[in-house]
Structure formats: C-alpha cells, structure tokens
Amino acid sequence: MIPIVFHPAYEAALPEGHRFPMRKYGRLAEILRARGLAPNGFVTPEPADADLLSGAHDRDYVGVVLTQQVPRATERAIGLPVTEGVAARARASAGGTLRAARLALDHGLAGSTAGGSHHARRAGGAGFCVFNDVAVAALALRREGAITRALVIDLDVHQGDGTADCLGREPDLFTLSIHCERNYPHDKVPGDLDIGLPDGLGDADYLAVLEARLPGLVQNFAPDLIFYNAGVDPHRDDRLGRLCLSDDGLRARDRYVVGLARARNVPLCAVVGGGYGSDVDALAARHALVFEALAAHA
Image (cartoon, rainbow, N blue to C red; front, top):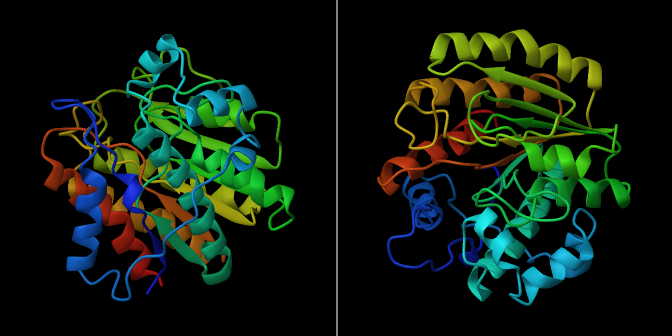
C-alpha cells in the first residue's frame, strides 16, 4: 500500500461555530482506515521547525506564528485564530508534506492527509492558510539536493497565489494552477502557468482541460517530483467553489493526474487542499478519492 502521512495535530480546536471544517482531517483518517487504505497505520511526520519554515517564509512572520503574536490584520486575512493549536497544526502540516514528498521519492507515490495551504505567501498567511507546506517542502528538497526540478499541479478551485509568491523566483520549481477565474483570491499572483476556468464548468469540460494541458507540461518540464494539490472545492456542492464537478468527476480527475505521473515515471506527492461545507462526512469522503487513486496506481 502507498504510504499515507497523518498527524493528530492536523485537526486543531476552533471556536464553536467557526466556518472552517476542521473536523474533516480526523474524519478523513477514519475513512481511510475503514476502507483499508492504511492497513499498517499512518506515517507520523516531524513538525516543521522555524529554520525549515523560514526556507519559504520571512523569518519574522514565522516567529510571530510560533509565538502566537500574529498581528490582528494578518489573523483576519488567515481567517483562523492563530492559537497554539493552530500554529502546531501549521507546523505539522508543513512537516507532513515534506515527509510525504520524501516517501514519494522513495516509493513513487505518497500522500498527506493535510496540506495544500496554497494561499500562504512569503510574508504572511491568508485564506485559511498559515504556512505554505508545498513551497516549504519543495525548497527544502531542492536545497538538500534530493530534487532539481519539481512541478506543482494545483487543482484546488482557488488560484495558488501563495505558492506562486513563494516559488516565483525559482524557475526549476514550476507552478501550475487550474482554478475558477472569478473566485478568491481577487489579487492573484501570477504563477508559471495559470488557467482560469469559467463558473459552472462540469466534469467533461474540466477533464478536457487536463487532457489538453498536462501531458505536454509533464513531458517538456521533466520534473523529478510532482506535488499534487487535490482540493475538492471544484465540487458542485462546495460552499466556496463555483465549479460543477461531481464525485465521479473528482474521482476521474485524481486518477488521471496520478496515472499520468505513473506513466511518465515521475514520483507524486498528494496533498488534500480545500473543501468547504457543513457536511464533514461528505467532504472527508471526497478527500479520500485521491488516496483511492494513489492505491489504484500503486
């Protein structure tokens, strides 16, 4: 079975009634166990420390998060109270993506049951994202010589502005974002390739975009590693979405991306990205689809 990374800190306490569906992380782990996708349990990552996080973020910003002294304006932009638990969650998530990436390099495929915090920029967080776990991991692996080139395939419904900001000066760390053009964030940061989709796009048209753009990009860029942000917020029932994918559409999307990586013999690290709504069971079940896709191609 493919290695799956999970840390209990992925699920932090939030004030009663908070709109972020934090419970989905623990529920996802329960679903993966129930479906037999983690028969030997999960890999527990080491939370990222200040030095690792400062490879992608300004050290002053890292410091105020780790000491829970985030300015109120930044906390409002993040949309989460940066408590000790939320800071621990952000550290665990970044460490989890790095661990999953290392496992992908060793085993071909791996995933973390958190991550995809793609709105966190170098100098601050936003959009429920504190630290940019994919940027942290990609830069760390490149610094230590484990990879030379990485491709970020970001299929969250929102543009990956923070990843573009963190990796914008790194030509060998390529950022692709396929997102709903008229959705958050309004002040998008251009990545290496941004494909904005119209509201209401459904399964067939969405998959046609992937089939037209991904194979040539993977072949021509020839990455050593793919980071796949498998956000489920393109789903038609997502509270923050504006696209119209079904469960079957998400399943086909995930299997296409993972299958393409396998066909090109490129290691792939999956992270869960966004997914919003009050039905936590439905959200967690959608997030489980990418792990089913990993298992199908193991």
